[in-house]
Length: 246
Image (cartoon, rainbow, N blue to C red; front, side, top):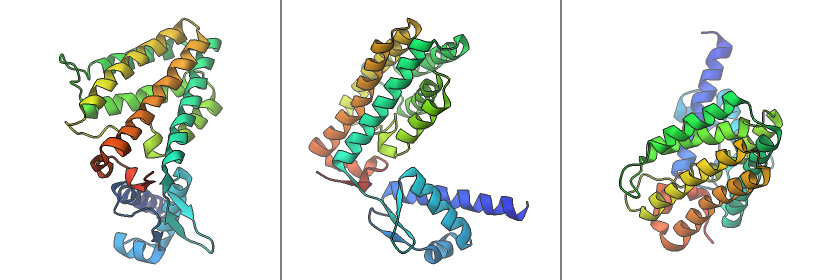
């Protein structure tokens, strides 16, 4: 392994480790991070640590501190709601453009395959859902949706809007048997997935955009439920420890 590739590997390892510590709450919002201390903990040099923190700042999990260095970001509840709304706007735009401009047949066939994979995540009983499989296939579905118009700018901006963990399409899907309401809401979400692709295939741009935007609002409803009715779930959902409670 060359020196450059080794440095890149160390930076990626540091990025993954720091992201996990932030999302788990081990590194709480507002905490100042120091290169020397982190380099000692992870047993790598300061350069990959600095690179990893720069990448996490781009993701929105860290912020640069005046005078140098980084601090773990915290987010107001309203900011989180706005981030989810922005994702809905961007995905709605992608859906509308795909419908109006016409998506490639191969891309639409892939969307149908992804829908079938999501369908398989649901059991025979109402609310019976394989959360882990759903989260994986749901992320793939939304990534493919962003690419459906065939415009790199749209795809890039949708990705930017979904970078924060609580704004991602699979946010608020903890593996928790108590979340009966959440499990049932996924049945509605899957119906919206089908309706969305149906609208795109029918070249119904306004309908496709409206469905995509309404679909994103499910995450907002789940967020309100957690903070209003069941705050004990906050530590169990990745990233919510960074949110300042209303």
